[in-house]
Length: 112
Image (cartoon, rainbow, N blue to C red; front, side, top):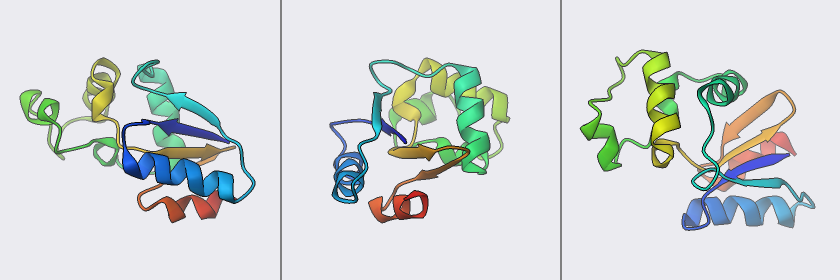
């Protein structure tokens, strides 16, 4: 199990705590320190089975500065996240071939 984590985010901390409370010790990837490449993001998107726009934190300044929208092509969204990892929605929990955006943290229960 992997959690893409931002320790400054309360929802991300809550999700990590939820996993640990349920006897999981996930690999913690602090994606702001070790940004994901475009290929990694594409693989993550496939596991999430969501539109690429759902990976974006739309309230970040970079979202508007880059002119992103629901109509932005997937490749452009993944390029934007790779260059500006703050745009990646968090926390994302992965287990095997499945992943969830754990907002709220209890959504990670589907992977336990």
